[in-house]
Each structure stands twice: as C-alpha cells, then as structure tokens.
Length: 420
Image (cartoon, rainbow, N blue to C red; front, side, top):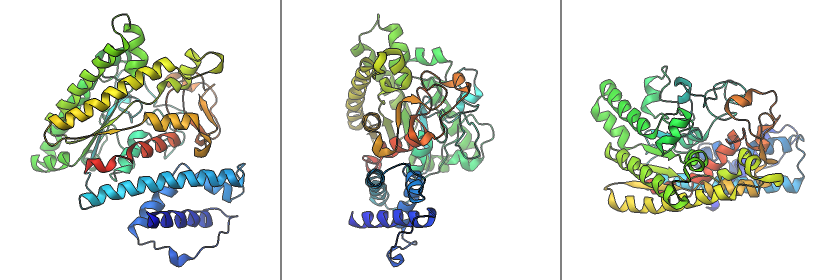
C-alpha cells in the first residue's frame, strides 16, 4: 500500500505541474516511472477523477477554495482512488492477468440506460439537449446525464472500455458487441407494472435481448468463442428504484412494505436465476441508492426544509437488506455462481450528507432548469447550471457525470475482487 500511495501522490503532483500553468511544484522526476503498470493505472484514475478539475483549478489560481479545503479534497480523492486502484489490482492479480473480464452486460433502469429508450416508443427519453452537454462531442445520447453514466464507469473500472453502448443501437460494430452492451431501459423495474407504466423494456425482455445477442453472436463468430466470452463476462444489474418510488404508492393498499419488497426480491431472484441458466457466472447486483434524497422527492415530500423522504429511504433499506440475504443464498445454491453485492446506498448517502470533500456545493437541486422537478422532457426548459461538477444531481432524479463516477468507483472497489 505504501507503493500505491507513493505513486498516487507523485502522479497528483505531476498532474499539478504539467496541467496547472501557475503551479510549479518541485518534485524529483526520477521517482516517477511512466512504464510502471501501477503508475499508468493510478495516473489514469487521477486524470479522469472527479477531483482532477479541482486540482487544476486550484493550481492555476482559478479556484475559490482555500488551501485547506483544497488539501481536504485532494486527500479524500487520493484515499478513494488508491482504494479503488488497489482493489482493481488485487482483482487482476488474483486470477493471473489484466483481461479477466471479456465483456460487460448491464441490465436495469435509467440509472444505467445508455440509450436503449431512444429506439422504443416511450416518454422516458433523454436524447435531446441539455442532456449530454458534457459528453464527448457534446451530444445527447439517451443517458440521463450531462455526460457519461454509471454503466460507462462500470465498464471502465472492469478494464473493458470507456463507453458501454445500448444494445438497440442499429449502428453497433462487431467489436462493440463482443465487449458488451447495455440492455437497461429507463423507467423499468422488477415489477412488470413498473415497466408498463413508463412503456419501458421490462426485465423479462431485457433477458430476451441477452438471449438474442447470444444467438446473433453465435451466427457471427461461432458458439465456442461466444461461450468463452460470456463465461468471462460481468453481468451487472441496477434496478428497483422505480418500483419502490413509482408503483408502491399506487398499490400500497394491496401490500405492506414488507410484502411488496418480498415481491420485488422474488421477481429479482427469478431474473438472476434465469441469467445464471443461460451461462452468466459473474453477476453483480448494485443495491438501491437513497432515492428519497433526490431533488424531486425532496420537493414533493420534504416540506419547507426539502428534507429527504425517510419513508421512501426506509423501503429502500428494507429491499437492500433482503437483496443481501438473497445474494448469500444464491451463492450457496447455484453452482459456479459468483453473485456479488455492491453497495450504492452508503456512498450516495455520504455524498448527500457530506458533499464538500468531494467538491459538491449543491445536493438538494438538480443542475437543469430550476433543479426542483425537471427530468426528461422538462429539462428542455431554459437554463442549466454553469458547472455541473459542483452538483450531485443533473436533473431531479439522476446524478451528474461526476457523481456517477464517484458512486461507481466507491460501490465497486470494496468487493470487486470477489468476482475472481
């Protein structure tokens, strides 16, 4: 770990010296070895990290942060990135190489949809400005973000690629398909009523798209190669927020919170088992974030103080607890399975409750429009914030690119080695 810290610190100093014109940090260049795999790994993490902009701004004199605040941001950033890099390295080394994950397949809702809803009739779309304003090429892609989303960072963390394309994109090239795609659909849920409400692709159809993908690839590159790829792939599921947020209030006369979350778990485990049956072995389950702290929920239920919705967060914690138990059970019962639970709830709650160390200045409003209730089509209303890196939320439900990067790294890094 001392070596990791040394390399991260020197990489940070190197970033300061080369990128900030007014910062002239003195360091001994012989301590930096650019050919080192650890150096390259950690330098990449630093140069693409959510704290990088703050480092450059401070070094160039364009930051309003005090020196102590800057050091706090840098320190927190270093700790998180060192932890992530250490776990990624441990995962790589535990099974003998850098390319242990051949492809990434993601299932879920708008938190991970990279554009599938562009190709279906639904109002749950984001393929128009101001969405995508900070994406490469400054173009909207169907991600509910100003830039890249959680799916992209998952693929990056697993060392596969930096952008995870939507499966329904008709222009995908073979190499893009072979290294994984996203099947998620904005508005989807485990409960079929959830997907029907939003005209989203239900979880059963997302599974059918995976089966179709396998058939198409079998015909293109052959069954043996497809079997080799899919057996070494990571299958990530991030879903359930729409169920507890949008559908439970409608059906609560029929279910208690306990019985409805039981229904969600039964539907979820049925999907996980069917995914396992078609050959998936590394299956990652991201638990639900504290959606009750999203700006729209604060406005609708939080009163004058715009407090988080504790009733919604309570349902989410109940589901998350049951999901954890289900993961333990499936690992015992399904042969060869590696079901891994990744905690999203805690990192997001930490960002909400203590945003300053991460460079966030606004956590109760979104960046687009008034920041109160705008999402999807309402985000076309004039006005977005100037600097989205200071905002936890891009719209009233979905995180900014910066927040997505942080939650992906903080959620995955502690348990990533369990995949191997």
